[in-house]
Image 1 (cartoon, rainbow, N blue to C red):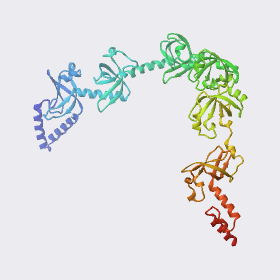
Image 2 (cartoon, rainbow, N blue to C red; image 1 turned 90 degrees about the vertical axis):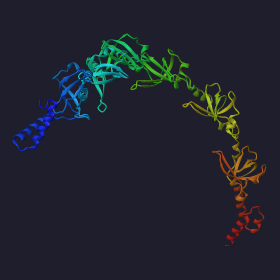
Image 3 (cartoon, one colour; image 1 turned 90 degrees about the horizontal axis):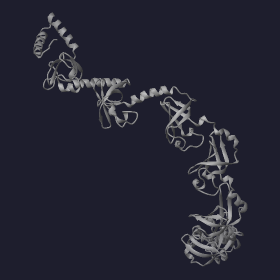
Image 4 (spheres, one colour; image 1 turned 180 degrees about the horizontal axis):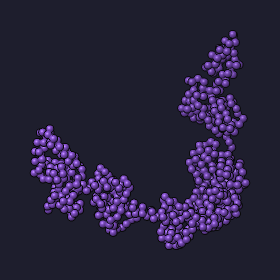
Length: 592
């Protein structure tokens, strides 16, 4: 080779200078052309991997010749030992190195065999990742969160998370260390130069291929015999078929009767026949059924009619009702609301127990939803109907206060297990409802009047004041503008409280209704105990509403005086300050 030693570099530069001094001669032009063609074949660039020839090996270093460089790169022998190339090197053999610098500050060439191997390995990993190909590697050591995997062909080190070692939990992985096996590349970080691999994907893929071949043997409708119970959960039971695949029987496919948990029916290791009802080739799952191997008891539903009474067996008790069976496999729900006419917030387990035979009436049959609804209370006498027969609306009945709250009393009526609702407003005509409620306590005996019976809603409303004389009847023969005599009870800023004579009710005459003149409309004019007249300004017997007004009385009397007296003098003797002016206005109109 040309320029094989350092001594020649000086001679080369000298010859080049002489050649370029005289490029007119034919010989120099030919030599220039030959030199340029030779240099173009050996493009030397930093950052590229170049094959170099080993020229010398010492105890510490390996000398490499690369055409086009002014000096030989030197590689540390320990670097070659670290990448496993020490035993294979010899003088004259080629070795790839990464040319880091053509010339450093000391004028030396900087090259690395380790970095060259790592870059070449990274290129191979990238290619395998892009082509979705597996690689051959071996686990070299354990680390936090997983293991370190060495790429066999390049020696590159990769990380395999613990969750990606196998498709099932492994207590010990010592048997996997140092064994060459396939790995799938799941992540590459080009910036940091890190690779993450998975052994689990290879194992699962292999099993998936085997499982897919096994599933091809089955089709919907096949009967599998001697399937072994392998395990169960809250949603179904798992069976092993032919020691090669597991299948699931969902809880709803175990029996036509209601099943709470598979362990109620199966034991581990038992053998049963199964019917294939579904095959999912994407998820590689087979669904089976046991109940479909026997006749559907719902086909016997024609033997039952809505409205008829039947005996049912209690199979299961929940917080909201009881699951019962009309016959084996034909299940139905007895909801807690259909257990009793009168009890509220029923706890089913306090009324029934598993295995009880009880009478029920079928209330609904839905063949599409395969649902049957039943009622136990319909087999019992409706106490609301019985109460209505004995005590129709308007009747009087004795009862006992069973409970109360801030706005009502609940009264247990007669000997019926029924509570009547007595609102506070129905306790008294006169007193405040909240004050009346305080007069009663649990266990008090009272007589009430039946106001309303809602048998469908199971509600009865009763009243106490309806048995008393209604003081509002005092206004029965009264009408608007009638004059009544009242006694002043008290006064406040809003007006005066008055009570009509021989009437038990009190009314408020508002401040604006005390007098015609605003200066006279003062509640302070009254001290209490005065007897005065007032007119009825509003009266509604249906709404039980009455309004009284002294102002209206003055206006009515003014109108009467004006109509009777036309002389101005006569008006001056009347006790109304505004009447004289009204009489003058009337006389002026008459003169016209």
